[in-house]
Image (cartoon, one colour):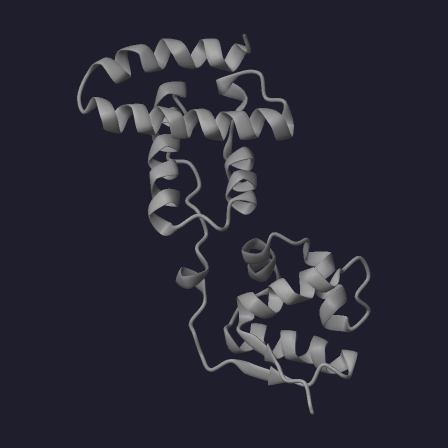
Length: 176
């Protein structure tokens, strides 16, 4: 049995026995899901080795969670923070609708690569986002976003650009 699982058992045994049992079991299962993800990605062996970095990586990998499900995970992480004696609270999930206002979609002609890079830069600046904030929202490295905005596309895939278009509400118009 893994070390973090043994450590978790000592905390969850008494926690599940009291209060709203169904809700507490659900919360423990979400904590276990988080720990299994973290263990698979980073081989964390102890609860005390889990920190903000692991939580941020979890949020980046699970951007498609609904707000309620993300909030439920966050409450579970708060309980884990309490059990391990960590100060403060774990990082909250970044939800796109909290950071981005929804102006009218920007239209771009995809025939020229400079238009794509200019559209991404213009849409980012319209929403008052820095490159770092866009990187946090998209989960991409800042260097990749800088390359896309410069028109070099080094290390960028079509799916990366498509994801940026979705985040920034850019619509492609293909002439007939």
